Amino acid sequence: MAANAIDQTRRMLSLVTYLRERPGAHVADVARAFGITEDELISDLDVLPMCGTSFRGGDLLDIDTDGDRIWWHNPDDVAAPLRLAADEATALLVAARAVATLPGLRESDRDALVRATAKLEAAAGEAAGASSRLSVTFESEGGVFAEVDRAISERRRLWVRYYSPARDELTEREVDPIRLFAVGHTYMEAWCRLSEARRTFRLDRVVEIRLLDEHAAPPELELRDLSEGLVQPSADDPEVVVEVGPGGRWVAEYYPHDRAEELPDGGLRITLRTPDPASLRRLGLRLGSDGRIVAPRELADSAREAATAALAAYEGV
Image 1 (tube, rainbow, N blue to C red):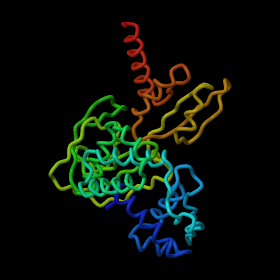
Image 2 (tube, one colour):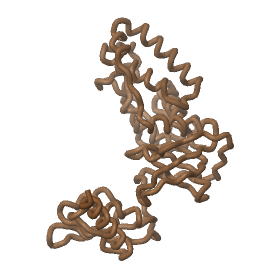
Image 3 (tube, rainbow, N blue to C red):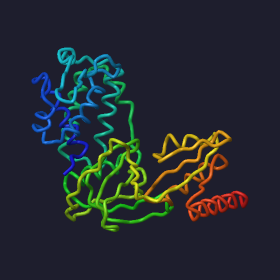
Image 4 (cartoon, helix red, strand yellow):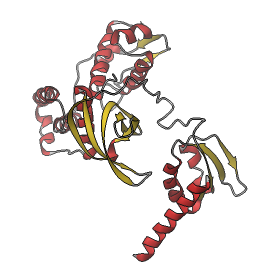
């Protein structure tokens, strides 16, 4: 089963210690030691160079790999005693207190965070004073994240009320969560009991969530490779043709497509594929005068009718 976000963080912290003691370790050996795939390990190694002992940079982990072995070039520098400036101590303490208030956080993790925060306050001394006058509250996505993370950890089913912008509707469903991941936004991959299929849910579109007592039992599924992005059209998906003017050329940059042909006015005729053509109706509305959906005809008609209805609503106001 896929590791949740907290488990991944623990693994990466252990990975730092492991690599420090084994310079030039082989990728295959490290992946085997941690019980993960080599691709998962490489993904962790892509994140570690963005971590370090200072928010100002210059003290980041200099770790890289040639695909076979892993090299850490500055372990002695990073191992030097940590000295926090006042602004760094304040930021860290405010963040720690905010995370400790997240709903759904496991009590053992909450207790550990509270103890660590107390130690940090003692070490920071006067520098910790400013943090007591600041507070941070998370928007709803933070609570949803915590509930999903807890459900994955405890292998429990979730009930969610979810907004689908493609159909402009709210649905209620029970899901067995598989993993959390981030590709621009944060998503939950889960087995949906309503559709009896694997589905991906964007956390900021979860209107309501509840942890259930039922045991989550998603079928054994091969995890999708997200290295090429969240949307990976298949050759069997329906074809959609969009024509855009110069102001709509950005569509070719943001949407995977089969081809983009230049038009005389400086625009593009873009051919792409999607398993759900109706999801592109919002694209047609967003483009406005900068573009239009050409095919399939029913999708073009639907987008035009939606635009006409929206215009009529504004005229009514």
